[in-house]
Picture 1 (cartoon, one colour):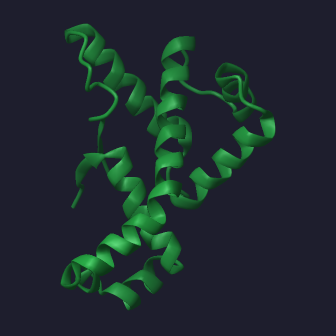
Picture 2 (tube, rainbow, N blue to C red; picture 1 turned 45 degrees about the vertical axis):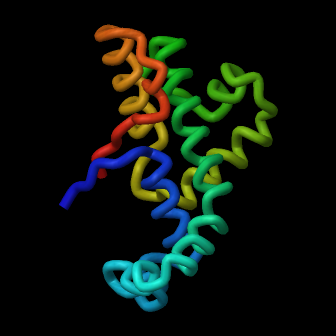
Picture 3 (tube, one colour; picture 1 turned 90 degrees about the vertical axis):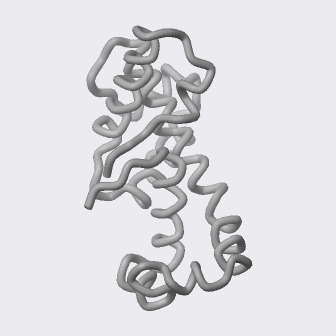
Length: 140
């Protein structure tokens, strides 16, 4: 079943799975529905605190990539084009892209960034919303 949540929430969940060593390892460690994390709030807090910096970097990368798509009025970018737009060193952009691929190996960055771009554009059309970037829903 598809779930709708923020990019950051999806990144945190994916980072927990990656930190555990993959889906199978996470299921073995926490249970198929993360029962092991639900049983102990302290354990869930520790795991979330551990992976949140990584998840935040990846979520920021996706949002910035989406803003670049919007600003450049494009559907796709390369890492080099993103680095130029973001005024980031190429090596930094490639590290961020690699970190993205670790959490989202099944979703190409342009695909997810287009969702961000489209969300920003729809909010821009409706009205300017201070929450426009912090509440970007993503259906996975």
